[in-house]
Image (cartoon, rainbow, N blue to C red):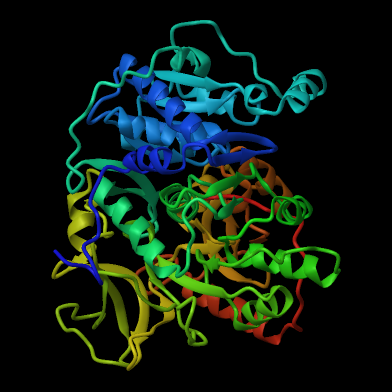
Length: 561
């Protein structure tokens, strides 16, 4: 089938590494805190890790979890699992234990790759006895640092390193790659074989695994590449500060970067001073980000003294990009900032504004190659609407998922005549630009990451004093939205907001933590007694409209799927 000007290649995802090594073997592939890996070295490590995974039983149908921040281990393990024939399941290292357990059991993850750091490893280790998880590959943080930093880390930050048992359930990464890299070749059918289970709220807010095939991901990588005119194979440098376990960074930073032989400048966390220092010293050409990241960059640039002159391409996704923020960024940097749109279910890119042509203010752009955006009547999805008519945005294209993992009913509900129902309301203008108007689903877009109200509500319900809980997203000038919780206590029970916040600290991640917890005597309900968010949301929107504008400067970008 033809997509755009020429057919989109349908090939295994791990072929991207082999092709990059063949073309750009001596070029740098990864820069991690000053330690660099060439494409030849990366391909060799991927092959050895893949063979190691095969020794551990990874093959078609085996799900392997990656619970890692941005680091070389993520890139190596991702492509190695796929080369071994397995399926990657992305995990957020900030997950609390209940979230880890839920996703492990739902996906059937039997092997996990993680770091030997106390903030991450103990949570994963607890899963060995309480979930489907059977074994853990342990990666050494010290081993991926430059020699000087490695010694300093071992000497001064020993307290941050976890104690790892010496048993058969724990496999050091060094042992995993202790082989000659002779991978047993696996016949991959790109159109059918699953590459990644990417967990998302879909249209219901309940996390479920979007099944992304090898063809979905390689097609979307090529679709994105074609949208960036003048991209120079083997010469670009991409800053990877967005977490690779998030579908946006997985495709637009890692897969696209490898496909064009770019150098991936990986940062394990977001800190604006470090980011600006890296941009000045490493001289990247691409900086994919979310609105909160660009807000922080704008604030940093206002102070002057930051060199961002090498930036050529900046693509924003994950949350709506305010026009003022975009204009300010372009004015301060001289670099074009374009907004795109997508979902985990579309691998994720579906539309992007033109990089070399006029953008439409308020639009998320035009469909990428081979993609059709339809607007269908919400209450009658069989009816396709015309230009400027508001309805549900639906998407067709080679990047659209195969369905939801082990959820046939949810999969059927997610499609209308073969087009993916996004759960977003919008319209398409006469020139094919897509505009989003509202969201059907309750998911809160917090700094470019999804926060599911139901997850926070369930955590609140586990507090013995809580009788009822409702979580909504309220406007946040920095993160776009932030969660706010409304709680009714049980009769005679006592608790305040700080008590509930301390309880939540062990149940949910920081990005999910409500910025405000309001305790009320009663919560609004529908006529049939169902708790409703609509009235609470209307109250908060009225408060936001009456409040004076302000623009806080962020100190860090927390990460969430």
